[in-house]
Image 1 (spheres, protein in one colour):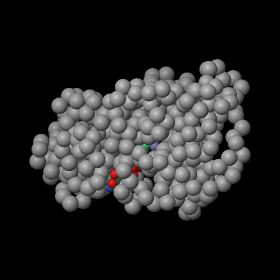
Image 2 (cartoon, helix red, strand yellow):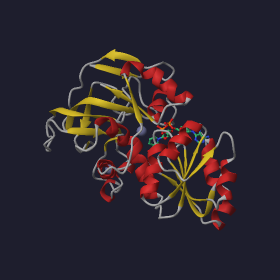
Image 3 (cartoon, helix red, strand yellow):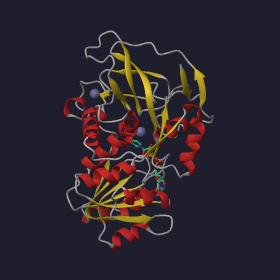
Image 4 (cartoon, rainbow, N blue to C red):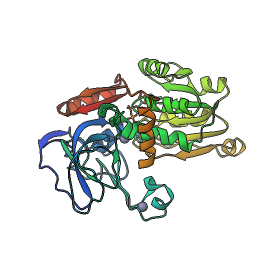
Length: 336
Ligand code: NAD
Ligand code: ZN
Ligand code: ZN
């Protein structure tokens, strides 16, 4: 099968012909139809984070496809079903996190496209206990970005406990951000979109953002504080600078939700201001299978729009470049 393979952190991906994966017990063989390109895949291929994947590996955790075979011990009726293969490949199902609805925090989890091979391939071996069925009302093209960008930002809005009429600042209107704007609106938030590219801000306006801030041309902290500060600031950029800006944009009682994962970087937290202002700093990592099912249900009901363009897998290195240099309308998705 054709796959895009990371062979080293300082090299471009290689398009290779590799064997179709053998199935371990509990796994499904999924024939990929669409596979989204998340910025995390770029971090993975570059070895940006403290915990690194081990080359050679196949990235991708927004794969959507049809189950063509099942391994030993699979109990569900999966053959022929269309499924999403998310970042959380499988969690242990037994620890205190798994048992309390926090499988995303499981210390024994496997991650698709990172610790196990992912969706930049014609086939992927997925765990029965990790996949989510895609409902008929959601196209495979839309389902792919929802599988990470969607579920991650939906969860971020949930953990921020956004209430109606609260001011929500979304920093970074890329693959994740264009969906965050929509989930913030669904729960009644008044949305400020912050980006450094005018095209991204225009997209945010079309998706219903109430207030736009160009962080390249102006000062987002001053502009957001001028209208009372943000009750919630969600940072979805892949660079460190907007995290500090987002913290300084908060109103009293404000919550900073950190979602972007830049290589390195830290946030200086002024203790006095945090204490007197009753501020919170929250980390949010993807979402559960139930969160993803809810994301699909909202999309099937017409509540969200996915902005994505298709590409061929052979173009993977050019696609990484396109994202790093800007100008991509939200998400790129490999079509098989
Ligand atoms: P993306 O490249 O599609 O979007 C990033 C956006 O940030 C772009 O629109 C870019 O113009 C904007 N941006 C850059 N600098 C900015 C600045 N100074 N101020 C405001 N906006 C700025 O990336 P993506 O796929 O949406 O992923 C974003 C980040 O989220 C990545 O670091 C990725 O690894 C991370 N991520 C985290 C999780 C999680 O569960 N926590 C899940 C998926 C992705
Ligand atoms: Zn992702
Ligand atoms: Zn667990």
